[in-house]
Length: 335
Image (cartoon, rainbow, N blue to C red):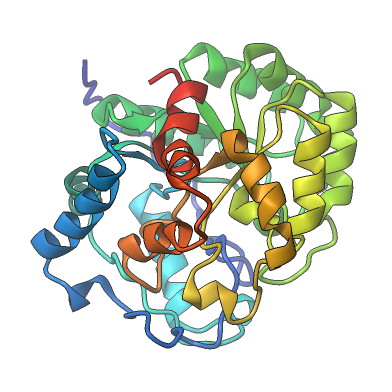
């Protein structure tokens, strides 16, 4: 079923804007105490064994991770270069990339971890880039059957057309990044595109919280406007909406199709500067059927298993943990 046709050629300028890396999490005070800064702290076999023991204890067939990044290598290396340069959106802090490996090695490692399905979170930062990224992601999905076919969008003329084309081509999840794209998700140009996704039941993971740094259009307000017009839209709020955790929980309580992913939340790294309020844990438990595992792999400053342990130590129960780490996403994506 794999199609090895040549991937589309990149536009002349595929770099992210100089002040907009793909970190999708918030900068911390360097590597958090007690959290190893790189996957090399453990041998790959040992690390994979730790991950497999985690989901094995839960009686799961594996994990489903809705927030992993695969993108054209040129673009991904620009992202890593930004981290290495300690750019302003990382607060100029050291950010060791735990899984700085080539595409084949990264894919193989997720499989060794027992991740049954993952995503290729990618997104444009300017007009004209999304169709090329979508073509690349479609090719990657053909080559990588355990990757959920991912696509993206940007507020520009023609967005409804290429979103519809991506859905018709089999896209199963979209990615939007309000900070990197520097756009209003409630922009009228996106109205019909969101409508296409709502009608098709295709989820969209959206980075819209105000971490690592607030943008003009970050926060729950613009998302509230989107959901008011498209209440059936399956939006997955990345990073639990950090740091506006409670505001985005409230949005999920109001709209039954809003979900949240766990990416980087509750880890030692993030808790040091954007802690999740413990008073909101009962609400998180109550929404347990709409919380999905996300990791931000490969751009992590700690081992993959740390995200899993961070969820476990919330002590919200085995049923909650099973649902978050596998069952909710398996149901959503009909795995």
